[in-house]
Length: 134
Image (cartoon, rainbow, N blue to C red; front, side, top):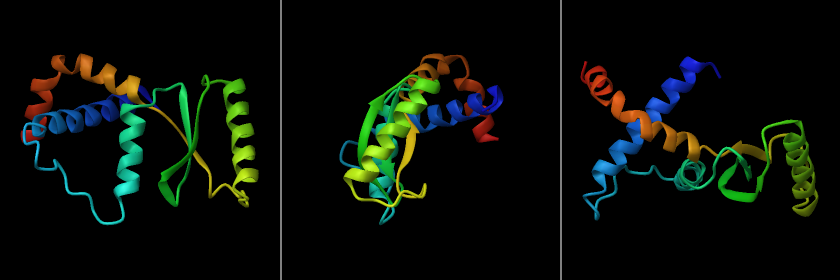
């Protein structure tokens, strides 16, 4: 991902996080309605952005993102990728899956990136608000 895309992505995450925090005041009211059938996916992405950092890789079922088979803590290098592949093979056997690349996916966590974006957001908040208003 290019630096510009990374910055845009982090900015979007920041806006979502800030809108959630502003709405938390209304404790009884959910900040966003979750469409029927997407609850598992929403919970999955909440975990990716709030519990798992970039050294954590969640192996999950893309047909049911709420089903996380396992989370492994590995570096983002060749050894880490080999460990993820080994874990994918283990899950394939354990759950008796036919692995064609469609039943087990992996996703690195993003908690540390979200926190980093929140820390520097103050510098850009006024400008982002102006852009959103425009």
